[in-house]
Length: 369
Ligand code: SF4
Ligand code: FES
Image (cartoon, rainbow, N blue to C red; front, side):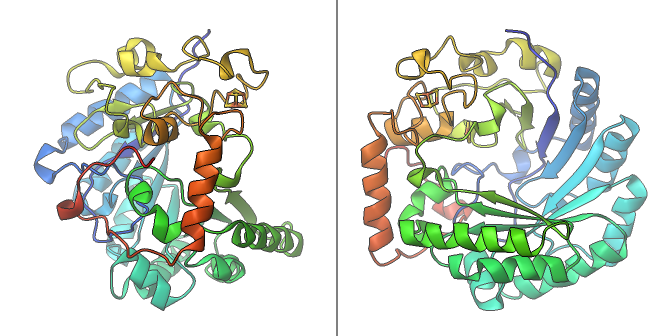
């Protein structure tokens, strides 16, 4: 298989975050501040990413603005010719910091919201006053003339606000709104019984999206990510393992996807010890599920194998304990029926209490049934 350069680097600068969302995509085993890479480490990694052919860098976390060197990293990425995007909760940004980031070359902001209301937003984020602060930050971003994307994660506890979320994004001046159903690995898998929607709720969401797209055609771009558990075929997660994206964890581990460390049978190379180009091309973790040679049946002989690349490796591992399995979201997987039954059963029961994303709750879980 020919190997193209990665399109984008997701730089997870830190796992520290003032919010505690129960569906956070960070690994359960959160990295501590004393393990984070230094400014120089990050600048070198960013230059290596640009040399390798990356076009974009997404600064993420945790909450990337807790790093006091964020401006220097944005400036380094800009100097290296990369398009820069900040993925943030927005609760720590003020006008001065934002102006410094713009001065450093920041080109886009993705602002996450937990709901369209203060009540649910602050409860899901586990951060009192967060929702109002985010709205204020959105205004700062637009005043700084930066393009804004508003991100909402939807689930059984806020699906009924979906149309309000889109209207809110529009009112905030966002050019794009992403409404993403929870993806169940890491913290979200632990909180599945608190978050899983019913099929009827999903149908409602799909109708609301269709209505909003019709009503707001040409006004705002609306992206919608459906939940895997009610799908018949899986998504092409990450556009295929090791095909398009690079992720670097706070301590410098280079990952094919943001949740890859949840696959505890893999080991990852570190950009402090090995060049990014060598890791991208040759490392064991990237080679493990690249292309189609690793596939077993039913993927191996399926005509969709180069469309969805067997679905999500992290989900396959989380559900079956074997990352080489067909993603159970595919209805050709022998695990698919139990996945759907788990979803239906959990969605029908009273929602469980959240296990918030906190260092003290960080105990790994892998198999759910
Ligand atoms: Fe995709 Fe594999 Fe399912 Fe075919 S069998 S649709 S390749 S996940
Ligand atoms: Fe890791 Fe899908 S989230 S491959």
